[in-house]
Image (cartoon, rainbow, N blue to C red; front, side):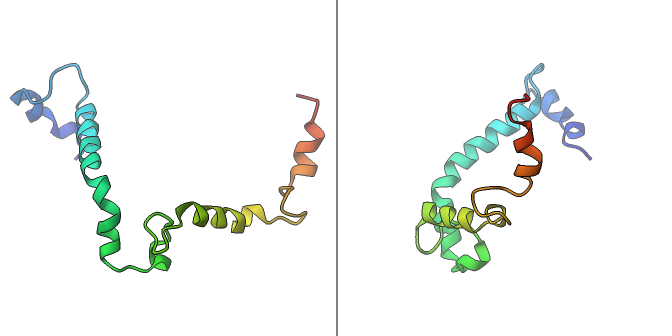
Length: 103
């Protein structure tokens, strides 16, 4: 059953005001809850002692080097290692360069 099918009782009770989609109220409630939880989220995740390799996240890693980790991941990404070197993406010379000046 969809959420929309289940909201009739909320309208009947006066909890939702007519004319405003009830999803707006739910989204607002989620945002309020996230504001409360967010400051504690990293410490909660770290308290379980899960290794960085399992989490695969730069945020809350054991080293605290969020930006350095993201930079290293970007440099090591397979999208940044191409046949023609790190500066030219695959397919650029064949597909994009001929279009220069024609657009």
